Length: 378
Image 1 (spheres, rainbow, N blue to C red):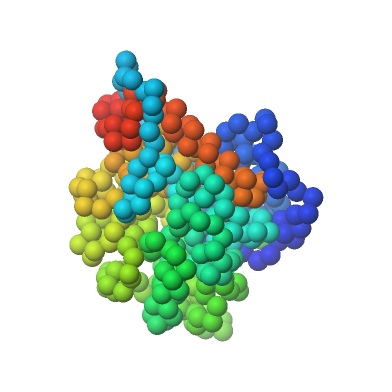
Image 2: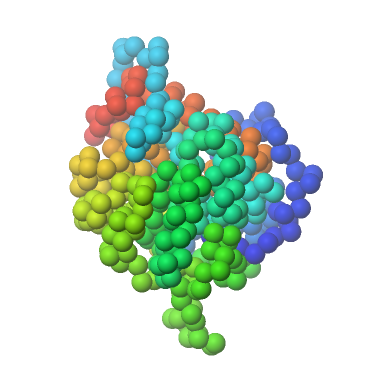
């Protein structure tokens, strides 16, 4: 998600609970409603909204629900093990924090609270270029592993220095967003007076010249461009970044099998199947439907992560059954951050982890590698 101008309705949080989740909140859906009640209408519409008519936003959720499970029975699941490996890093579970922007808009401690909550839940966190905290603070906020999501800038020297800075701060991988050369039709934001990145300067991008310089009176088709997004990204850009980076590079926003294979050929360390939370191009395929073809095309060459509409432990199990190595949670983490800061982030991840372990046990899978394709009803 991209940041928007300061909203006093969420910045003045002195009376808000910051240390606990109410007892009657038992699932992510309950937390969503609580976060909605705590945010202004404008802010909530920014967090919850998708592109245009929000068709794909609904599809992202429903596509996971429509997959039917076929559990095995009489399997010893007295010791369910959710641990996995991702890019050589051992993880307690395959649930990652997706990159979302401007966390200080939801909690005064911003990305620092998110990183602490993720670390407390033994989760890897992916931090955004459009975050509200300086890169150096990301590295010192918590001990847990983290990656950095990158929007490449037209000024490649600036981008190269940013890569060096985030790696020096401790990022173990870079996640290059490849599906956002410009923003989509954010109708809900426009109706409620919300805005996107225009006019804001995230700390990571301080001092960078705009990727696109608009004329004084841009024509309608020219207004689609955003100063922080380079519409000139190509495959050569990806190859340049892979060659430059001392840590693995994942391509985020891949939906097509041919693009996935080309990413592998370019030397990526992983692929993130994502449609940007359905916030860019409406009626784009939901990630649950795009995932199998990408998995087939990649054929195990690199790990695949998936996001978009994952709300239950069964969704996580389905993603791994379909061939993903891990999943990322975006909006639910924002809900937790809004309601209870680092504790709220930890609650979201712990709840998802618990539900995932339940799903594994009830599917007859004692280990992650036992989540095999036959567990989807055909």
